[in-house]
Image (tube, rainbow, N blue to C red; front, side, top):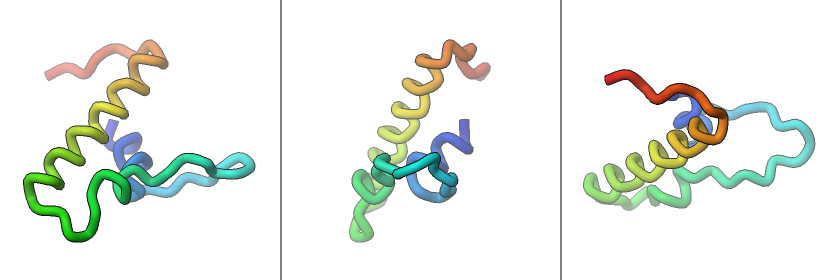
Length: 64
């Protein structure tokens, strides 16, 4: 899960097959001047994207 979140927020870059059209959502959701609360909201959005991607793959939900 963390690797997926890292790819979404731009922390981890992946070699693309062809042209990479996917935006770095960390830059979109969390501008440099973001407050701590804005950063938390951005983190939650990126986790929601990662969770959605997991649901598309049919992977089991995380155990808590």
